[in-house]
Image (cartoon, rainbow, N blue to C red; front, side, top):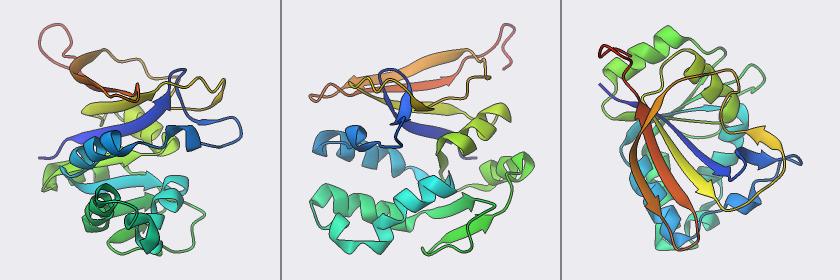
Length: 192
């Protein structure tokens, strides 16, 4: 059974993009990118919303992106090897391989996917991730905290979810980025 892992890169004040929709401040350096590659490598499936899909599709549609360094080439190979599910009511079709399109988020289908997955399942994009959190399907939250204050924008986490988390791992990078890995904290009496 795979774990469902929400991966997010966020500003210090908790946003994945600023008020203008920009996230250029979150671009990883080589050290952080190599670490991200190793996190994504454990996944066999990645769930994403339309906007995240449109951002990530370049790893297949723009070969020059992968050629900028051995680390980006590695990420492109990892990404292209993943099965991807895009959740969108507005996307006409997918333009990348190993990608399927779902019109609605079905928590029961994702639970079945977790049970059948050969590896972990990644989820990215704030709207879809919020639905996954609300459905209680997240096993881990892997956060890359970027030393930027952006003052507003799209929050990394849904505002209406309240859950106790347990710190499982942490790492500080030379750039000041901090990686935090959280799991669901067991409730009193041993159950979640």
